[in-house]
Image (tube, rainbow, N blue to C red; front, top):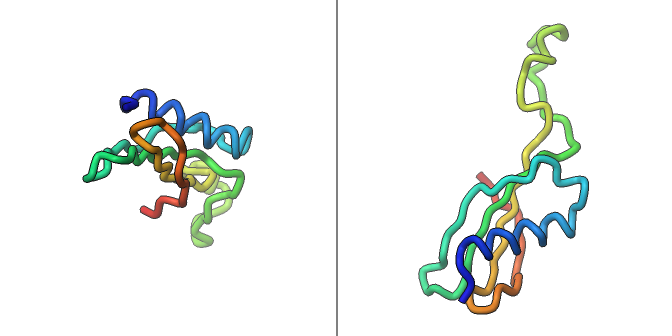
Length: 94
């Protein structure tokens, strides 16, 4: 059985392998063991290249002060808790 640290490393490596440089500011967001103990559910987040929407009523000079500048993507990676195999990855909606 793999522990949570191993599961996080596998999930991070998996997402980095798929997205490469597109996964800027990759961070661990959540970890959870499934209720039946068969899976690690690891959520990682990263900044995308897509600009965040800015309220058009904000004056142009003030828009640079508004954060975040890019949208954040969240991926839920499901790992087999016994052997660490990645079994699924999907978008994690907030």
